Image 1 (cartoon, rainbow, N blue to C red):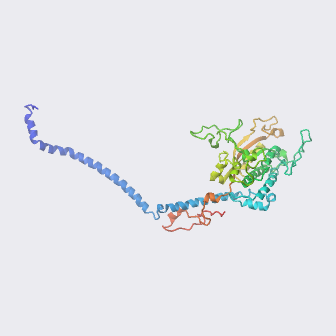
Image 2 (tube, rainbow, N blue to C red; image 1 turned 60 degrees about the horizontal axis):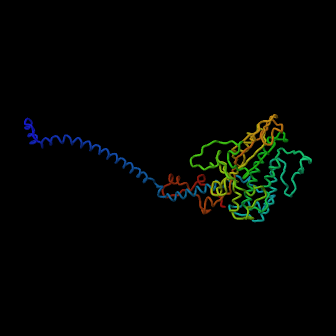
Length: 471
């Protein structure tokens, strides 16, 4: 490359002294960059070191615990599990015992030996066939006590084959004597209940337990109706002069809980994506498929085809279908009822009560249901649900014609809900093979906080879980 003559002397000087020039310029550039990089690296080192120190401090804090929980994790977890199981069974048993005054087997109709065996019957146990045959005959007399408990005339068929109350053979015959009872309960509804207990074959133990449970629930509702009329002197001043329908269990279970038919109240809802078509029994859900039931297929049946007497448990499953519902009112099949421990602990038995009532006392009826000695959950209250409006006499126009009584404040009311019945405590289902003599363990949290390592404090009277009685 040709270098112009006018700058050639300068180039020669640079070439001759370039080393010394670079030795002076390079440090001026490199040194500031080095200092900046070193400062940034130092900050990053300090940040990482602080994080490491924080983690080490957490580890030291854990190491400083007198009794490290992880060292006894399996032991503490097993002990806590036992405590929860024992407490669960104790609560179940207390709930069941609290309903003992309601679960009364009538000794005068069944005999003391039957009552003793039935009262002590454990889950899966069976009654001897002679006792089952005795219940088959006695249950019809037990059902006959319901009208009296309500304060109504007994219009059920006689257990001897004759009618309990003389009835005219035809409309042209002499009219039946006027009833002097406080409340009227139609013959058709009484007969419907009676027929469901008029069995052609001896029942199984499970059928006896289910049937008696229904009778207890019928009795509770009858007692509530009678209590509402406690101050009445005759039908004209009764709070409830007419019980149009009383149903519990299978007849009261709804194919479409919360809404069925044009006169039912329905809640419009949009099901979530992937939700079951029946909506889990919630209002607005699609109808369920009602299974058959031998006791309610026209009356008189109580034994599935192919089974007699106290047969296998599978033969009893058909009797459990739709007898109970879940908390939302959805009827349960036998498999659902038996598979869930919660459903076995509490039986929600549906009921339907349709009455003519003085509307000024409707609140009192609802309070009586809420204050029952056994939990009653009222889910629906429908007034004059038959579709008719008030009549000229001022009465409501529901089914049964309350307006015809001439009482201006009468209305027809339909109440639906469920009754919470305590299931028979099943120790094995909750505690498994846990021995009876194993004492409940102390709360592990109290052990860690208040006791030095390696000690096992004795539980106090207030802290120790309640030990259930041995079955």
